Image (cartoon, rainbow, N blue to C red; front, top):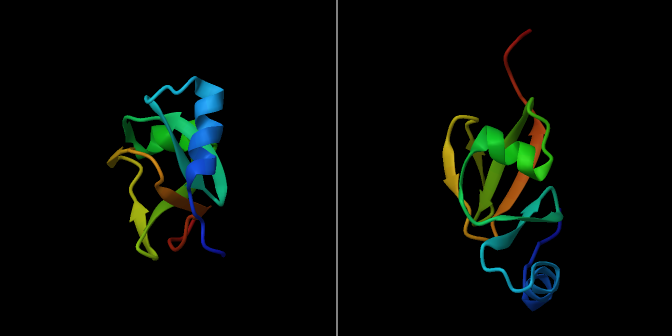
Length: 93
């Protein structure tokens, strides 16, 4: 996976779409830009907002490290966060 950068292009794109509304920010989910409301989310709800299937796990990439996020955890989205979704691992059915 290549390095993902958010710069002025993302901000300009966002501003044009939302009339410079500071309540919306850009995050990266599975290498795609998603515009979401700057807010606190329960992970299960955040996955629905950004189009990640409910049965997938979501990791936040922080400093190149993948940190798993529990569905019932709370996250405060400020903008420019990077996430990767994947099929749940382990366990038997």
